Structures are given as structure tokens and as C-alpha cells.
Length: 323
Ligand code: DP6
Image (cartoon, rainbow, N blue to C red; front, side, top):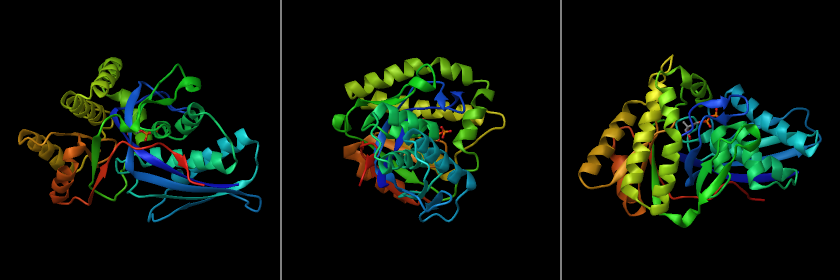
């Protein structure tokens, strides 16, 4: 009745911002992402007869909000219901990067809990069903289930909104060098941000363009056309943040180091180091480059004043049971 899972963070090239069904986390549009090789969560779940309540432990975290624990308990409840089990569980979870800073900690953390809980009960489900179950915990968690390059389909509703692989891990040697700019948790959660998305006067226009963008990015990944891919990725990140900035109330996920890095990346490009930025709901910056340039990008990121860490990621595998 015990299992450990490892699950990656992922970076979206075409992003998920806004839902048609808030409770079941059905997105307004399809999104396209890549699993990250070197940023992940590890989670152990043990169902035990002697426990009166679910015990959740976050390793190496100074601050844990009640809401974070409740989200994990809801995963356990879903899995218990499916497995027809009543026992409570002991959960120990940890990330190898700071949570709630724009590095998809809910994606890696909640997909890891989902896979570990299913594993602990010995439940076998298709990748599609696991992805749907992870989606209920956090939308982006559904994209951490398949390996490599992934598309999350909005589907027609909760029953058919899931993620699938579109290209394998070794399809294209693109790196995401993640600049960790803070250890502080963001003030506005992405769940809240999704709710506010349609208060932006530009949201409708964004959504109208998403189908075309998803089609385009898949073509560019297929052709391995890095320059066009990078330009689209960067424009898409700015488009999503334009929605955040113009929501009511406004959400600004960036800090001064984020902006500094954005400008630096543009300058590096002019100097011939081809790289593009993308940013999720937090101040960390993901610098996208070809693998041959990843070390140089990391070196330059580490030189930016205030930068905590730079982590080089390749396309990675999805969630796995370790035991
Ligand atoms: C900004 O998955 O964190 O990273 O479904 O409410 O848990 P919930 O939201 P979450 O959304 C974050 C979205 C994003 C963009 C993306 O990764 O597509």
C-alpha cells in the first residue's frame, strides 16, 4: 500500500490561461509543453489502516499553506473512491526547486501525488485516464504525465480533456535554462489568475488566436525550425502576461530580475546567442535555446545580479513510479 513517484515540471510553449470549467479545470484552449529533465517532485504515498486523518509532509519547505495540503487530500479522496478504499494516507512530498515561483510546482507536485497514490493501491490505468485524473488536481499536472513534447486537449468537457505525447523525448535537442530568481511564493495563485483572465478586455482576442497558434507551434516543432519556434514562444508568453496585467485586479507576476533577464535575452540575441524567454505565472524566467548554447546561456544567467540558480533542462520523461 506504499509507492513513490517522480514527476517533472513542464514548460508551456503555448499556454493555458483561463478555464471553461473552473472546478474540473477544463481549459479554454489546447496548450503545448515539454517535460523538463532536471526539475521534478518526488512523492511517497502510503495508505495505512492505523491513520485517523491524512498526514501530509512537505520536505524542505519553510511555509506550507493549508490550501496546499487540502489539494493533496482531494487527490487522495479521488483515488480512494476509484479504488474503493477507506484507509487514510501518509504523504511525503518534495521538490528540487522552489514552489510557486513560476516553475510549475503544482504540475510536478500534484501529478506525482496522483501517480504515487494510484501506485500505492496497485491501480493500473491508461495514460489518458491518469492525465485526466491529474488534471482535476491542477490543469498543468495533466501535461506532466506523458513523456517529451505534449499537447493538452481541451476536449468537449471534463470527460475528454487530457494530455498526450506529440513528439518523443529525443525528437529535438531544445533546452529550457530556468533562471530561478526568488524563493518567495507568489502572491496570486494561478488558480486565481485563471478566474480573472476573462476580466481582461483582450482575453477574447487572445482566445480567438489560440487554435492557429497551437497548429503553428506543432508544425515548427515538427520542422525543428528553432528561430520561428522561439519567436512564437516569446510572443505567446508576452500575450499571456498582457492578459494578466490587464485583468481586474491586475496581476504582475514579474519582478525586477525577471525584466532584467527579458532584456538581456533580447540583447544576447542581437549579439548572436540565439535564445528566447518564456514566463509562467511567477517571476522565474525560462530561457529557451538549442542544446549547443545551453551552457553559455546558463553562464550568462548566473551573472545577472540577484539570480539564485540557473538549471539546464532537456526534454524529459513524464511521471514514473519508482517503486
Ligand atoms: C501559467 O495548472 O497552475 O503555467 O489548474 O488552477 O492549478 P490550476 O492552474 P495551473 O496553471 C498555470 C498555467 C501556466 C501556463 C501553462 O503552463 O500553460
